[in-house]
Image (cartoon, rainbow, N blue to C red; front, side, top):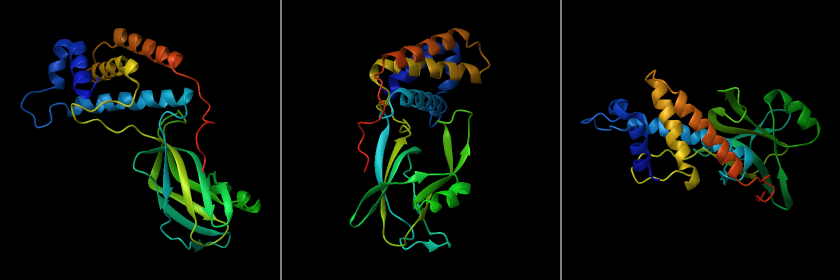
Length: 229
């Protein structure tokens, strides 16, 4: 299904309540509904990543804002911008001329001295937890901070789980596998009913069942087949 078809199925589920979600005459009549649909896709993507870590993984070459680094007394600090669709780090690799790629630890800022004592380059994110679920982590900025053992023009390969691209056009198609698009419809219906303080019990039960069915049908992967550097 594309976005237009998902919208229509959600509106069909809502019945008379659906009129409030597609008011005629507005410049963007589906804007509120689209946000709920995209939120549902984001939720389902996180669930899929738990059984298939390769599902949304992408890689990006990171360019340091200050290649030479700022001498902090315990190393050289540099920053790089994260991809706009960044959700979480899968792995990070440091490249230097004449040296094999080295994996970089992502650590909490207060652990920097410990890792530097072991002679490792590290990186950290300014993060804020937005949910009890550790998979739902937001960065407090769009930067990753590097604490390097040496100054110089290093570069990094970031493997990361990407957020799904927001759908806004009728022909847009979700990244969720086609056979599970019905779960998007159910989850979006539940969200819409909840916002209207309507009874969600029947659709919520169907949505929870759909999520279980989706996770049971997906192939289990451990991520080992992903390239690392």
